[in-house]
Amino acid sequence: MRIRTLAAIGAGLVMLSAASFAQAVKPEETQATREKGEQIYDRACFLCHGADGKGDGPAGWFIGRYEAPRPRDFTGGGFKFRSTPSGELPTDQDLFRMVTQGIPGSMPAYVGLSEEERWQVIAYIKTFNQSFKKERPMALSLPNPPGPPSDAGIENGRKTYIKYGCQNCHGDNGYGDGKEALDGNLKDTYGLTISPGDLTGRTSLKGGSSAHAIYRTIMTGLNGTPMPSYADTIGGNDKDVWDLVYYILSLSQERP
Image (cartoon, rainbow, N blue to C red; front, side, top):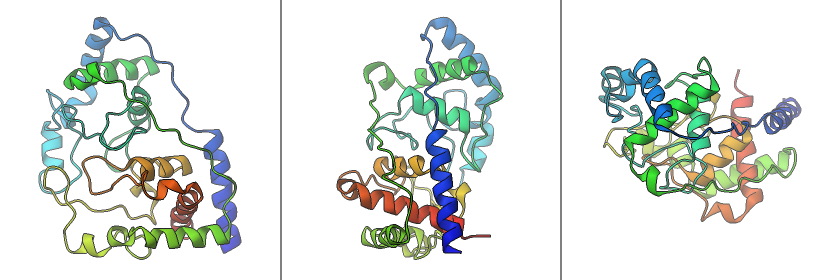
């Protein structure tokens, strides 16, 4: 079982590294681009994100009324899925990636829109937050995995998981049943109860389930949630980070 698990993880890492998200060429943002983006937004995004981008659309208000996650409020700076440091805005490529791949269980993938249409709607979404006019978000450097996983590496990943307190939220075995979660202590920025991801299921990895995506989440954290950035702690030891990534991947590999 362990051999098959490691082989599956290794194959996935090779495939996902080779097929990592392509850097789509961003066209120039113009008033015409934003106007076309508004038309697309009204068709595809309004119901959840609302007319003013506050995450209070007819469907969005109902979805997030009692528990998180609720649709993103584009007017604030709390974007969860980024390649930028904690607390910063996402890059345009981050926004393009999320529109393209969606968020499992929360937001559909808009691959039905052409690449041009996706850039148009992103240009319009950025008008909700004036900070996009002032800031130029810069992505963190995300290194490649040092090599395929090993039993020793995954074991070190589990030790790293415990050392940095991941079990307090995600549970001893990654089921999202840690003490903080069971006690209802985890809240988002709206004060709504939020559940940590069940790491034994890939769909719980909202920012992506590739090795690079998990690494990115560990390094950047998820703004607006209790998930912090570990860039200033575990980020000092790149091997421990990758071993933790491999350990997290192993949790879902062994689940039927």
